[in-house]
Length: 361
Image 1 (cartoon, rainbow, N blue to C red):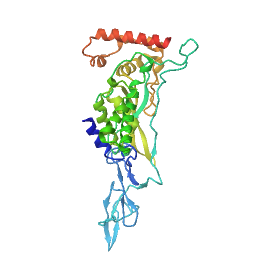
Image 2: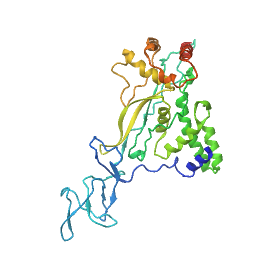
Image 3: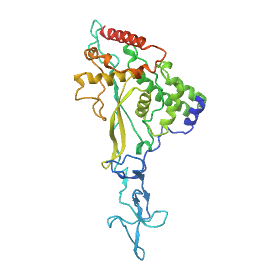
Image 4: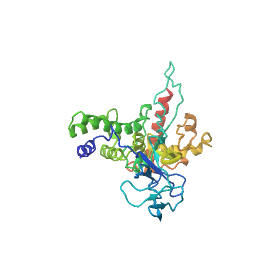
């Protein structure tokens, strides 16, 4: 089944190497629902060519009225030209202007591209860490809801628990779950490269699967869900950060900070994005959400802004000051039904103590 599904995507041809343009050369946008932007479905459109060689926006378009022999007037106002579509028909006019995206390109905010805290910092002659220690640190990430540049597909849609949870007990495990998300994208690229080099669909699928799990514990990812996820997001105009965020978000590892505008044309927002702090485990996200309100050092800062999420981890001093008895960890307990709450708490303490001991040596 995995080979068959991958073959469908590979046969499309240029999904990865030559992505389809997300917008036409002549586009227009209008705030139809009055919420201050034009990023919602139906608020952007490709303009249609007229017989005079100009373009007209279909948003708000109305038929012109006859005022005399072969003479027309726009009922919206004399400032709007009546034009006949290149295919012929009744003259129309529109209050919304068209923009040539070649002459006036869409202004896009780049992906957040936050690498997160390095898994290993500098050490002194005795092997003691000299860098800042952060516990349950996160990474600023974004995904894009339906908009013009995602072809109105939802790149933030939860696709299921693809990345499996786990606390991790060493420094090397801190970036594992985020690395899994990157691995899925790498796998798809490898599959496509093999296909273009002449491999059969089965061989390409194997190349993609092998590349996906290089350096990754296969038990940390639901392979079948990951393959389906790759196919869906790549066909929706979602980029790599959309994919990474979507995987971690669907796996319960992200805290959504808010929404901001990520793409504009002539100052009009045509694409939004949701900023997140994503962690390597669901437990990390839960402890961050419930631990920050206990600490004065986060007062006034909170989670930062949607465009610049504040995702730093706890210092050892902050972590030791947390009162776990005031935290509701039921969301975490619910996923480990085979173990008692007491066993989980003991395991948590042992793993955290082991982690603290590791970074302290």
